[in-house]
Length: 274
Image (cartoon, rainbow, N blue to C red; front, side):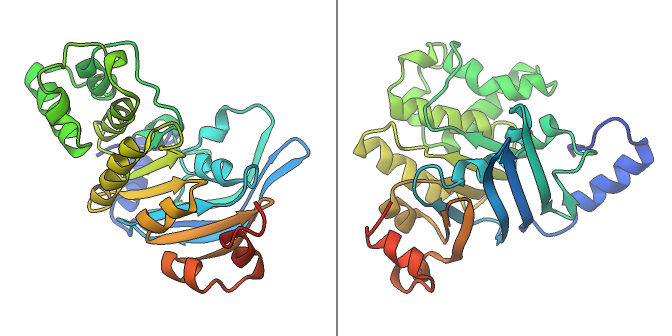
């Protein structure tokens, strides 16, 4: 069991909190979240509840706060100077924005896949094994098991099983993105964040990633940011529409696209702005 709490707590306190973290619902609740970069109020009082083992999509025009909201879920905004965050993100009974939560440990449970594939300049095997090694797994057989399982779960094993010693940079763009997904899966996360994961890919590679997302939600909570409304409609169970930092509407994807409650949502969906 991974302890996501920082070292300034006693062992008894950390153990008690960890039991709480891993014994309650996997629902992720965002409560009155505000994020600012200096004078730029990027996310404004967002409240929403994300169901486990489902796909949630954030849509909206560029600069509306989608990626900023996504990055808050695994504390990536902590790395940005001048970023101020208020509110709570409650996951399994704990506010993961709290000072007692270790962001590095949290990120092994809440993985991230970025817009542009970013494999390490290492072998395919070493890319996937990187995370487990960081967490102290060095036995050859165990690493081989993890690498195979992760590549299978990312729908890449059949294409690379005889190429594991080759450089990850030799893979196509779509394969590199699936490798990055395998790298995230290797540390056994529960939530996978995807920031425009298909924007740099061709239609064939995009279709493979979308098929993979459909498979991943059987075992993981997937949250995706996309500018492609058709993609959101195809892959997501729930959709949130953001505009100028505000969550304008959030609900079942079918309802959002076929019967939006807010005029702003309707205007965006029908292409009247954005």
